Length: 173
Image (cartoon, rainbow, N blue to C red; front, top):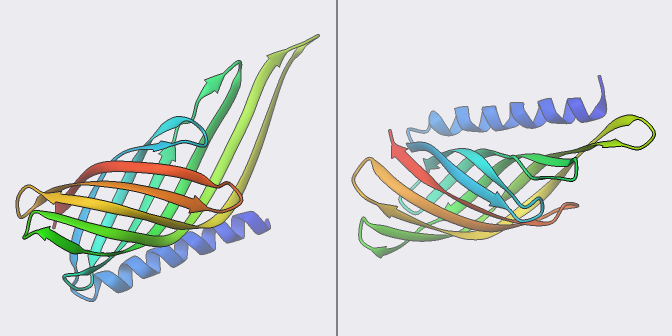
């Protein structure tokens, strides 16, 4: 088995085990998703996210985002990012507005490619992956007991340093 494939499977298995362990702790769980923007590839993305409240102030939040990237002169880019973040909530408006610092781990898989004409038609594709650290902040506005919206800008420190902004909806289970 290739080294990158083994690392991918190990990461996915580790995240799944963490989610299973946290869910057995009777934590409050919220799931949802939204839209994101990655400044490195100048493209939008779709996010799927969960949030496990360990206490009223501490939460663990795994998420997956696929950034579509851009296509310019036949050159295409896209990224798949897997995140595992920790939040520490500060209540600004009781049961309505919470802000939090964000710290976590990131695994990103990048794929680039191009199709072009010279003397003949040619296509190439390059993919790479990197582990990194997420540093950022977030805000969450709770509309009701079951529905809230969030906004999370973060900086990813890795071989592919980038700024990512996510916004979306969370449903409390």
